[in-house]
Image (cartoon, rainbow, N blue to C red):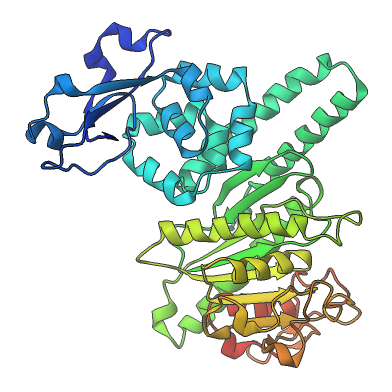
Length: 455
């Protein structure tokens, strides 16, 4: 039996000039026969150069007994999942760039079927600083797209990739033959420009992090307002049908900014009587991490299944990276997006502290007790003239008393705490309008002060 051993790095410099030769494979995995009397736990080879476990040497396994397995670009091309990422990181910067440029679908396919966030996080922890930097610079789209890499690193990689893509499209457009190709390029260029625009914070607003960006189809993007790695309260905003990067990303990020501002304002108000809240911070995630439906596919759950998986991965990654100091996490979901959130909270094992559903067509879950939400802290808002909440189109009506969720007001009036005038939400698309009772209640639920929610 063979097992990989890794711990002590002999750098490529120690290997001599041949290590940087373009024809020489740079990822070297060293394996040794398993000695029953000297069991060394198997680990995965990571990084450039030769990796040897000093424990294996001290157990008396002769170096001459090691079998060397080499991976060059041609071999890396055949891999998938975390193995592809691991061995890609072991190539030189030039080899990484050339490999991806020769076949961009290698990264596209990986993103479509990504490795587990836990595996990605483990890999990142195992890489040295130089290898991390090399991979981020040489493969920015890959690093920016995978859950498990740190948010700040993904932001850097995504901003680089968006900027590079815009420059490439602007250069390519004048030379494109064919109307269809030109329109496709123009569409992607406009989407990426919308992403760049949405990343610009307001004068007094928080820093913004680009957690992911994908201009394929109608596009996907996830932008974080605030510090996702340190915030005490994290709220995910999940949109419903007709929300596209091209058309609504700026508005959706604006809604996130309004919610962020309200949460900060309420924390400041609360801290006047509760000093423990004085230094609490928030982060709001404008999560457009799936392709939302239109009238042609709104009746299907296909896109909801994709959103379910992507949202679950995003929240699980946050909880993985924040283990030991988990934030109070809330999902606020609208319309079709609420169906995806409900499915994620029943079909995955992760849980959140609060769930807010507005304009929801329901899901197969028949009760709030079926959801992985702490203390059944589920809230539902239904506006006048919105026909969706009572439709139970996808299997249930969370606004029904039998469901067991709390109801929150969205009809406007006077704030019972602040005394200010609150706007009314009417129809299916006004739940996130600034100054509404709806947003006020969402903000309070997201900072664990549901006792002040107006029912």
